[in-house]
Length: 449
Image (cartoon, one colour):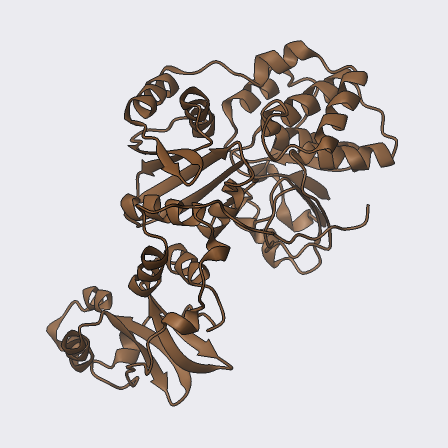
């Protein structure tokens, strides 16, 4: 069995890419996630007789021999198919237009930097001389227009425009575009948009005008990305970011930009997410929103222009603890030194890390006499001394940790705290100073057609 799937929160570009992949692989089954954007849900409902899709719960993953993934390159964004990650004989094909490393370990991949993933799929359809029906052309054009902002986003390429012309020639219906590319707003969306506009700020960072919103969202609201885009358009700013504080101490960050100099996709990748130069998102847990606002401003200043490496900031020598040290002794040592955590080592070998936060795991007085090795956190997230401070900050935020042991050639050579990294950023990029554009050159891999 071969299946085609895409990311959670499926948009029109992702849906179009699934359908295109089914044209390329006629025996494949289209599998959609549970979460679909409202306009995608409406399109499928109206065209149920023309397109057949399954849900992951309906698939026997044991029978899947080929997985075709479109418009995403991360396992975490696939819905209900995690068991396939461990399947040794799985053939995995990847079609994606996003930058960044993939953890899918594809057998074959086809990736390139274009405005919409459907543009990438159309290359293959053109090469195989696949004839498109008007409904295919209409859906593909809707996906292309949505992901390129009607060909206005900075990530739009000449190939996207040529793809649009090809789809018009294939009978794309503009009525379908008007119905699904700009869907009606719900009352919840309108209320939230009003709050965003009412509380929006305008920051001048170097020569760019940016808006950053913070709002708490206590109930599910569809398609928050379109509200961020509306804020950017109404305020007429170069870039807009929405920080939506959700339940479970999570924060969804969505960004939209009209200039290549504020590369939203690169900013979101630094924060553990992803996207394109003009659009991106990230989900972060257990971080103060004020820190995230500052981080966005710092990243807009240009990570690659912030000098220094981890080895320039790390603390040496490192205070360490032995695995047999009693917890009572270890916690007192941390308090005496005014630090919140320390690596646990056996000679040169890093075994784990203990922090003041681990004290919450001590439920009985007698446990304070137990060895550190019983309560230390492991495995340990580490970093090499030649990495950038931004990479270290990204890793600490992603894994919600306050310190990173610095390891070179298997040996502990230093330790870097979140305060060290953020202090470096604030020192080099004062928030009241002039902040410049993000300067990035992401590397991605192209496969032969």
